[in-house]
Length: 110
Length: 114
Image 1 (cartoon, each protein chain N blue to C red):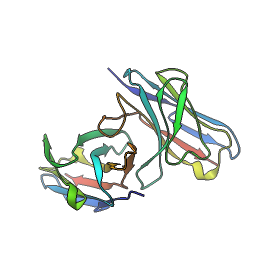
Image 2: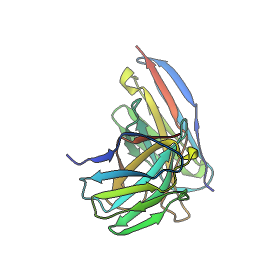
Image 3: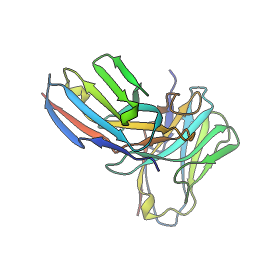
Image 4: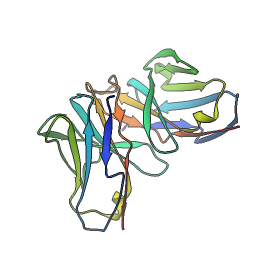
């Protein structure tokens, strides 16, 4: 079945530095979403990006469908960006279910 | 403001006991989902529903039942709780099906089975 691998598993930055998170998946995906999970556990959807490049605020996601990879770039990181970033994909097989990666735990130090 | 709420927020259960987790949404969404998250891992889909009085199996339904008595409410039932069901459970809702539809998540329920 579909597998979603995220890297790195954890990342520590100083405030103001940029972060680059990676998501690789094992088979073609029709949709890809990035989620943020706060240290308290709450989940929010950041953006959907099945292909190409999408920007929202300080976030930029680039998905190369043929290469089965996506990245999430966070510019000028802030301490409030600390948390876990999850990548989820929808398989092209027609099953609409989201398959989640294990996440990247980001810590931004002041 | 539209929201997804869950109750209880945490629960300790004994092995073999019955556990019911509740979810309520005010988003007016047709689709609702139950996921579990194990420490250090992503979410896995247990059950979902697209209409009241109907539920569907997700990736890992074994050991779980679901109930959707109304559009707003979706419950997850563990008839015989086991140690392996210790996890954080998330409920979510969406306007339509699939990853194209943004899913709105509840705050989660931390379940510990002893």
